[in-house]
Image (spheres, helix red, strand yellow):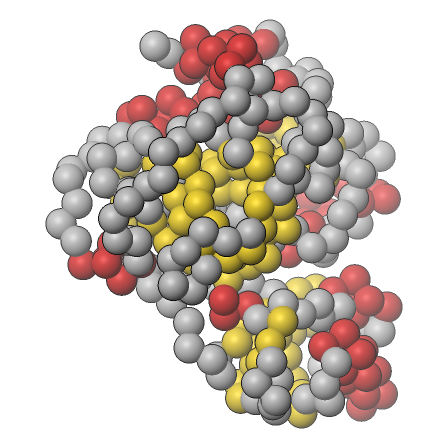
Length: 352
């Protein structure tokens, strides 16, 4: 079966209800994956180590077939006009790229427009305003730095790789990981939920491994020879959708355990930091908040010039409002963040 045949099969069978028997056996942790002797695959995927535990995964050609088919499904579901140009900004891109077609898989829909690609560094707004793409694909954290009003031909945005916090009618999000590829695609009829792909069995469990409505994301990849009940490190919530698709459904992809702010009284929650509001205070290009201990945050900023005392005071007030506690806030200026999956907030005060 090629990816076009698989795509057509997925288009037919998405409306069928699938029931899975309860999966049994131990949950595979990232530390286990790091140590195990995995059966050799056809190629290797390496994670960026955003959890602090980088791993390599042996993947199969079957997983590549599924990747192509699910990318075609995303285009079909969200009614992309393939004649438009497509721009991609991703950390693994090392230099500007131009090609005349989106890629071989999409040519089955007809002739596509050109594809442009750019590293995460550099003058992204200047580059995008020059090429004026019809579609844009990037991480949510990078999207926050883009002046979308200046992109006059933009018809749609595809985000992936990070928790999407800020909604936009142009955005269609995709939930994925380096270990298994595409996990779920935002429903074209209900932007509040994601539908899990048929090659993935997804479980939500609590801290002791029991089924839960909100909890740890456990995935079994049916295209893998060994990724069975793998704890991917994320937290999410089971969802429901009235669209009629029989696929597993999730909502509120919450992020990782270490993305929760820990308050002095021992309570914790996934915080909102500010992001777009920050830029009303100062011309901040990118930021990351790190909880150093129970009362201290370090705000790492990429800026053209350090903030004034007044700007720092306004930032502190905004962060205190969003988090709900008057943390001591230290400002640190950096040139760039590490490549890979970006985390807006990281808690180093709690164990991961």
